[in-house]
Image 1 (cartoon, rainbow, N blue to C red):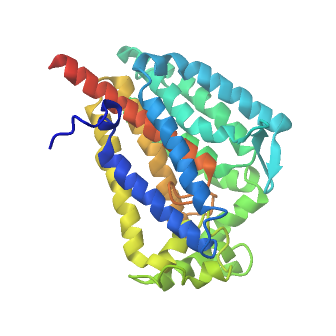
Image 2 (cartoon, rainbow, N blue to C red):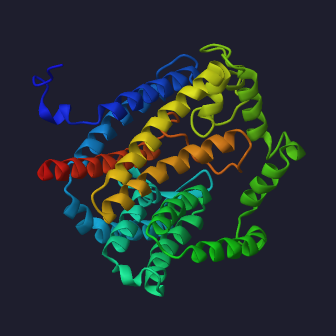
Length: 372
C-alpha cells in the first residue's frame, strides 16, 4: 500500500499503539458519559479534550533528542522538588490533602510530574555510573536520596498512593540497572520488619483504616468498607456481558462512590461485564507489554533501555493497583485507571510517559537507519 501521500510526521507515529489507545479513551468517555446520567458534561468531554491536548504534548516530547533528555533530568528534578516544598508551604487543600499549587491559569499537582521525573533522573544516574561501581555504595546511596526526598514530601501531603507510584518506577530502574540482588532481598526483609511499625506510627488514621478494611471489608460495610463493598457488588452484578450501557444501578443510584474516577472500572464492569474488562486488559497488554517493553528491549543504549522500561512500569503501576483496588485485592489508595478514569493530572502523567517511550522508539529507529 502506497502511503507516500501521508505527511512524514504522521506516517512515522506509532499508530499500532495510538489507535488502540484512542479506542480505550473513547471507551472511557462512554463510561463517564453513562456515569453522568447520559451527559457529556462534566466528565466525558473533558476526558476526550484532555487526551487530545496531552497527545499533542506526547508527540512534542517524542521529538526531543536524547541529549536533551539527559541535560534536563537534574534541573527538572530540582524544579519539581522546589514545587513540592511550595505545596507544603502554600499549597491548596482539597479532600483533606494538601497536594496542589494554584498557578492562576491552572491547578498543578507537582507529585504527578515527579512520577516520570524520578524515572528520568534515575535513568541518567545509572547510565552515567561506571560499570565498575555498580556493586558499590555509590550505586545505592545517591538514588536512595533522590527517591527518599520527594517520596517523603508526598507522603506528608498525605498521598500514599502517589508516593508508592513514585517509588515503584524508581525501584524498577534500580533493579534493571544491575545492582546486586541481595540489596533487594535485604530491602524486602527490612520492609517486612518495618511495616508493622509504619502501620502504628507512620500512617494516618484513615490510612490505617484502609489497611484494616482491606483485610476485612465486611467489618464496617456501611463505614470505611463501603467503597470496596459497593465496588465488588457492581463488578459481580455485571456478569459476563454486563447490564447494558446506562443500566448500571450502583453508579446511577449513587451507591458507588467516585464512580467517575477511582472506581470507574467498577462502573464499566457493571454495564459492560467481563467483556469490557477483557477489552481494557487487551489494550494495556498491547501498549505496555508488546510496545512499551518491546521499545525498551530494542533501545540502543543503557539510558534508553532504563528510561523506556521505567516509564512503562509507571503506567503499569496505575493499572495494576487500580484494578486490584476495585476488586478488593489491594487497599484503597486513590489511584485512577489510566485513560478510563476522569482526571487531567493522571492523563498528563501517563501521556508524558507515552511520549517518552515514543521518543526512545524514535531514537532506536534513527540509529538503525544510520547503520543501514
